[in-house]
Image (tube, rainbow, N blue to C red; front, side, top):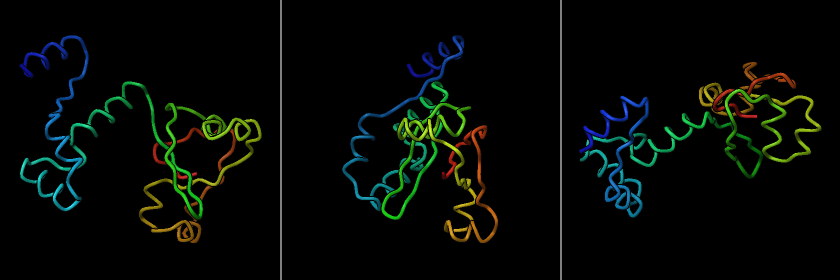
Length: 142
């Protein structure tokens, strides 16, 4: 059945994401270690579970991406349209941020992971000041 569905979707230029509701339900009830063992027994990694594939595909179809903000007590992910400039992205948090936007300190996700901290990113010159015309990239930490 899934093969027929995939063939029809291909003809229509659509995408199919197969999901096992039973597997997804079982994953919810497992602790992280058991979850990893269960997925390994199915030859699936955590990034390729049905729910995560659905989310990735939805983001792609809807032309969405994520950027992050972080402070001393909280880190948040924000969803925006691809191609949005920094003021538009700031407006997702609060309209006043969009209207009053001047510049934002920005670090790429990859640089933050590689450096290990915002302080180390600054030390290595990876932190950038981006203005109103900056197009936010997937995973930017602003």
